[in-house]
Length: 631
Image (cartoon, rainbow, N blue to C red; front, top):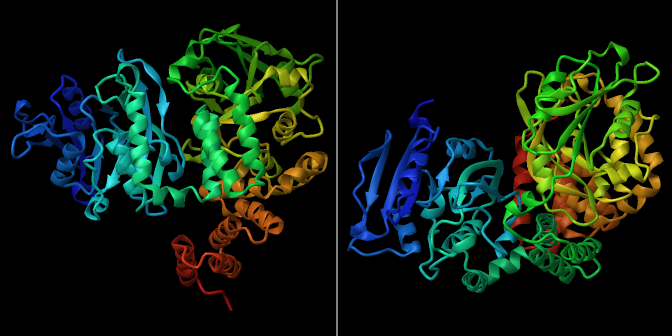
């Protein structure tokens, strides 16, 4: 593909000619995206050194202020916007860095809803270059009430926003990027890409917007209040969406920002005084504030003692076992043991007592026999010595940061199960998508909340009696995690930490040739009967049904969303959020008549709501584009 058909991207650098400028320029020039220009604005005026017309093969333009003067941060940003020629624009501070795949990763992301802003995670590093953690995750515009949704360097936006009048407000000497993102958000949804593609040197600079010596809390509070006054009408609109507010509250609770979490739950309770989810959120926030967790630099968690983690592998001695063992051994978490249960009995090859430096124990069944899946799992639980436990199938893989990511994540005092996303691969190793997202226990009625390899659980659950039921030769992990859910909360960590090779194996619980739908229906019915007393109260909560249904819509799974949302409507027929979301789920499932009835009913309640009108227009376009039914 030539540059002519790949959009030009402008990397915009506001420069005070600091020594770090060279590093920033190098990172811009090293992008794998082929069609790119670099625009540097000399924010310190004539004092800025001259720069060449290209930098390591990339075209470069140095823009000096006319007349000569020092430019404030928003003025320098607007000068960069004016000078940029790209279709897509990306700011980069002169002391930060882009990783080589930054632009190509963001531009490769699907933008199904026409998003004109795309952002990723940012790795935060201290003054010595050590990683402190990551910022930014999937969310919604409610978060802009509290802070930017992304660091400046992590965010790519379309030139059309600038053409429509989006710019930097000179009234904001700092936090002008937060104001800018709100302006963009009034015109476009944001698309999050779950990868770290840039580095924020948060302790460098003197803006007061970072960490350490570069943090000015009082300045930030003043700026946030100024932003809230300016965008009051916009925030009132966003904060009127109870589902979005509850979603944001849950994310803040999971991330340890209890002030923002409490504000969200209080707002949700203001909108719906009897909202059970908001009440539970407030209770969880109060409980969590009493623990040692706090909103802090992410490195704090790494300073705590490192409990032993047992990685448990039920092995049929397949060729993929060595790959699984390698992935367990390469964990960055310092205190790990590997326990392998020889599920095929004495036919299993012998294994060494260490694997690439990690202690390993091979457990043979006594008496010798082939162990069914639940029996092998229970043998692993019995042999494990760790405080935290993690199953890994012998054909799946953990990414190196898996255990460290889950162990370092803030969690509420009641969460004894912590899980992340898993990347799904096909039989050839090609990534197909991801599984796992923030949710509620009711999701377990329909499927596991996470892939087992993506899930870490505390040994106290086993001591209380949680185990694998021998009546489930398959879906035994689903049954096990329902058992855990009756005893504790689950904590979601928004990161991809493992690989599920879903087309390998013969359990029938995967994809492709490893999928058995009849078997699934049989065992799900059995699960529903076994755990009926646990599920029934959950299925009577419209708020949780709406929330989980909305997440399935976001995950592009409208058929699963339908069951949740139709149940929510049955319990609360006039709920406008349920009507709208169930309408969308029916639309995407091509149930056009049902979709139109629901969306029309919602629009009668809010006749001027632009989003509902657009959803009805989307329905009509989809219906017109659908093939005519066969006669």
